[in-house]
Image (cartoon, rainbow, N blue to C red):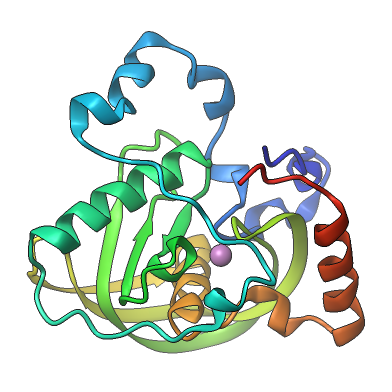
Length: 216
Ligand code: NI
């Protein structure tokens, strides 16, 4: 799976700013605890009727499709949210946008908690970014194995619907603010590699083609 943990080295000052949806920093040893009976139970599709969805990988053109507004938070959307959470936790990642599982709806799931039990669901998110420009390393479940510096705003106000269809408003900063911006980009068909130089982007593209990593 995602084994590029180089920025987790204790002497790496970039650690606190690392993001985003594939960043394992907030995940701890999930790979290890994943094998405990409790988690096997928790993640069992049979018990919770959830499913792990296939994550599209760069440069799949479907990642470039713009997601549509969710008209109603109905049972189909609730099922999508459950499946996306399952997929994100299993990957493991700290964020996932519906485009990444080939559903062009404006749905995002995030969990930056170390305990992996504090999911944030954002449906039809609207962002107002503010604050300073900050540079931090980002990765993406759709670009497995690559982490590159991206500049984002360090604060974001987000208005959205939650998984029950209720309106929520959230002020975020730090890792969460960056993660929300990263995931919201997905809804617009944008990937973090778009912020890189074309040289770097084509290098990643070539390597991903050659390497069978990701396993999807
Ligand atoms: Ni991503």
